[in-house]
Figure 1 (cartoon, rainbow, N blue to C red):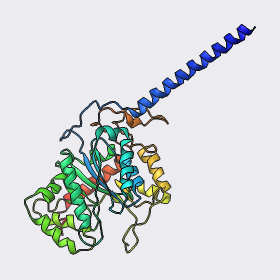
Figure 2 (figure 1 turned 135 degrees about the horizontal axis):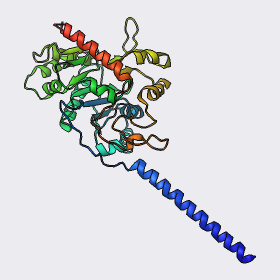
Figure 3 (figure 1 turned 180 degrees about the vertical axis):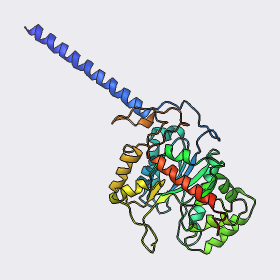
Figure 4 (figure 1 turned 60 degrees about the vertical axis):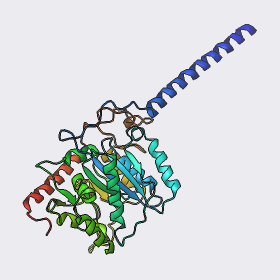
Length: 356
């Protein structure tokens, strides 16, 4: 009887050890799948036969690191390039934390298409400091990546209303259908073509630099600088579409900033056909609604697009694995955005002089 009891105890111990080994193996396999994505199997292609690429310049103030990360993941795509800018008042520890968070995202770690400005300049509403940091960002992005077509400025208080798979096909590279520059007179938020920024930064013409000196003495100079350069340059005059592609609610007469958006504004936002909305309080529940109903984005994950090939599981980011990053699959909001772009282009074609 003693020998039988010992044998049973030995068999029970062996069974438990085998079960624990199996569970450990399954856990390690899951972790490996989550944290070690395969190298991307296809190169990123640029040109008229492929979707355009965007260069995003995303800015934020002190303690905006988490908001910038959330916004980045909401507009992330391997074909794009990103430059993140925390204000000079932000602590170095906040920048280091942001960099550490970026490294934890598998696609960002492998594609290496996100950078953080290490030393920020101080910004004021008076003078040309905001223009200067924007031009500096554009110069960095021009140097880092030769493939992007459009330069987009965003702040931590913005959020997208359409996925990148929906944005990209609707802003073609440069064709008979569409080639204007997207600006809104009186708005600091712009979408500028690569060729225009090359003209501003690398061109031989002194006009951009002359106007920059003029706007040094202006208040809210970012609301007029690029517009003035465009309308005084023969090459780019009358190539503007007068919209910043944002959904905002203003007082009448308008104040310095638009209203903060919330859940009560959600239906109007999604019906607007805008690419972005502004402005939001940090962590407002309406952002979770946009993530769930429009972007289909999980917590601390990139928006899943056609490039993501991983299975969607609670323990796994579907974008930790990927296939062809040159393939797009626009969501339902892309149709509304396409209608917006078509309307803007029709208006542009019907006007002879946008620089009146």
